[in-house]
Length: 426
Image (cartoon, rainbow, N blue to C red; front, side, top):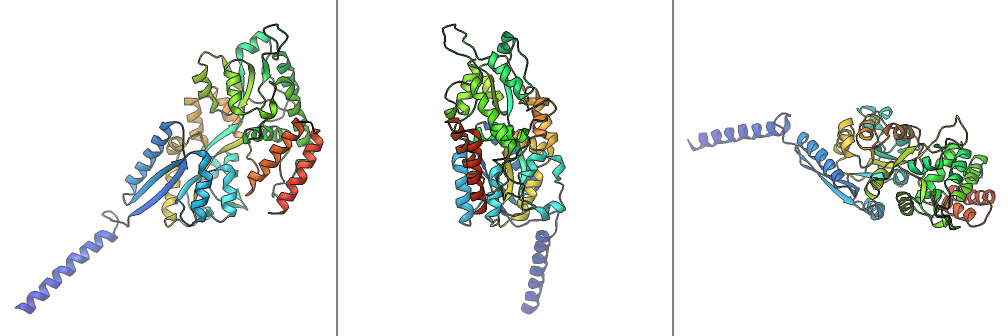
């Protein structure tokens, strides 16, 4: 009896064990392996952005109950270094967003993985995104990121009341820009001192200056480097011509252009000291908050001549997956999940990178959304280079050189020599 009882108990145990294994293995009542994913992002000033991103994460976790995603945000100034230290130390997040200009750097360093194999069988298609945004993630003919959001440097913001008072219309060409700017640069107090200027002109050593001059260069048919990133083109006629025009704009700008930064631009514009400023669509909230009664509008930046197209400079953020992530497939599933129209609308901290989500976002939250959308459709990325910060530094020095006395042509030639030396050492 004891022997028979043992056999019976063993049989019952096997049945229970088999049932438990079936419950674990088969989908439907599946109890899959628990996964913990880290998602890092840049800290936003608007709390709603974080709340919206957490709602997308919650929806994903509902679809995949075995997955927990922790969102960690970091201020911009510390974010890049934090990512690099973690990734180079073998302890990166599974997913992060990276600034467009960091994407090739992270790819060249082997910190993130190409996404081409995932894309072949994916619902994500490049044609649903702004072309310039998608291009920021392509390096060495591979795709290293998926665009999340974008911003176009720049729109032309103008004070409609000052324009009406001066009897001028929105300029369309570079010559018209100077002409209108001169009429708006006046001594309103009649005391011999100019106290209103046509344009706030960025000139400080900063990326804000570079995205502005790049837009002039792109619109004049120029490039910063060759398409393969091996040669500098800062000494080309297109670049020199654009920079000569940029220097002419000093005439209609407040004094101190070599130190003029974006924060000062906002102050000058919202207090009526300048009639025009150049910045992206995100500036609208700042103007509304600082000067709710200001009668302002936006337009496209003027172009060299009628018939030309203005090409703004793109900024924004891309999703990437890290080489040392232990859950790459699930990380990709989250990126796919977060890249649908509805969720891209929620995840974006700037304008969504998807065309459909961008149209919805701009129409709901921005004035003159059709103007912004057209600017974004024609925007170009900055050079796709793993050493972009050094490229930008050379451009910043070039601008300082010709603002402080060197001829534009010579400053461009000297800068291009430095750029070629830099590119040759990659």
